[in-house]
Length: 225
Length: 254
Image (tube, rainbow over all chains, first blue to last red):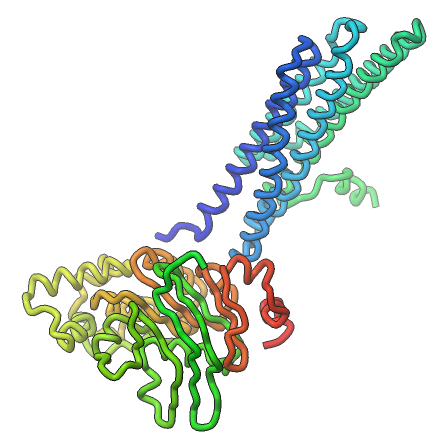
């Protein structure tokens, strides 16, 4: 019995990717905690981790390219490697957004809090759970879970709208609030983008497993035609 | 380069009559790695391979200049013992060339020629080790008397490799070793080579670029008797330096 001939390499690629995902998860969680608990030291940690994520992004792309060039992957292996390259850049974007949250937080720390931060952590929690479940779907090859994660994106969009409306009222009440409110709106927007990236990853995961593209609801549109 | 070469050629030229088949080849083969030599038909890759154990001596009208250094010694020196050289540098060919005789005879032939051992138990141990080395022991341990020609082709090729490693060489040369095998048998031989490289320096000549990509750590690209580029396989197949290598790898000629 021979092992499939580049199983080891695929496992290594898989591990490199999940390591980055774990880092990104941690960055998102810390960025929101920094905002909620007004902790500056967490911000520095996020900045440091971003550098690691950037290096890993290059390393993963390089390794994926090598496997395609040298191992002639086919079928599921090929889909896996292509999706890895895409997931890799989604993760790097998510890391950037966590850094953006920290940058706004740093600015907010110079001023007294506008209001208790309640909805943003809730939004962050859903967002993190989406990333976590996406990764779980990826590792366990669970297509149903991947599809379900995509649906959760609507929840985050609703929260984003709600936070936006609330902060608008703060701005209308007192123009002294505008600066801080805008920054909080931006943070909400960053989280909403992070959720979008998780959705993209979930779609890629679904594609790896099923070989079927669910992006842009393409199947339903084809059916209607 | 970051290794001490197992084989090094210095300004190696080879002529078949007036035809210049190898032109000023300077190559350093890394130890305990698989090195692949690729290139279109007639580029001189087999000729180069055959220089490493002086198989070209058998061909008439061949003239060689330059040096091939193995273990600090030019193998073209007059005092080189050819028998020892070829024991040290084993070779496996395109078609499995087992003798029309038993598996046992095939494996012990070299031992007899080289008078390596007489003790029967030692010989049997060597047979077991070499067959285990190529993953054939379980299949053949009860069939040592069987004529090797009746084995499946892939097993015959494995036996040819076993016949080489039973002599405990340092270097194994393979000239298109999988070209008569089907894809699955090919993958099995490739797996075997990847395992063998832990103990041996392996040089493989292949038409099959994908095979070179899959198994080798270093690759040399040859064209019209010249060594165009020699580098890590990863670099050759992702970002070669010479445009002729790029054209060949991407199937633009050859």
